[in-house]
Length: 61
Image 1 (tube, helix red, strand yellow):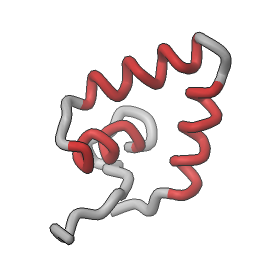
Image 2 (cartoon, rainbow, N blue to C red):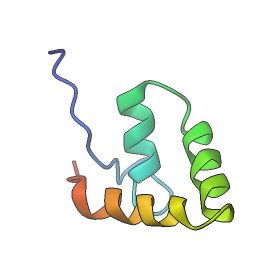
Image 3 (cartoon, rainbow, N blue to C red):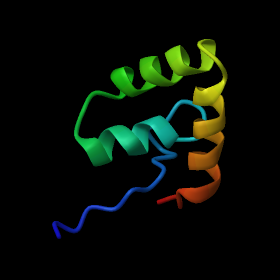
């Protein structure tokens, strides 16, 4: 285990830090995560539901 944790990054996030936390954990650009969530939200609301689940489940820094 490398010591990384999946947490919401409220200091670098735009709304609640979910996308910033996921991007930091996966070590990819936060813009990619945001585009994926927006695309999923526009294609059937699964992105919005997933975002809300992450918002509830992920702890903050």
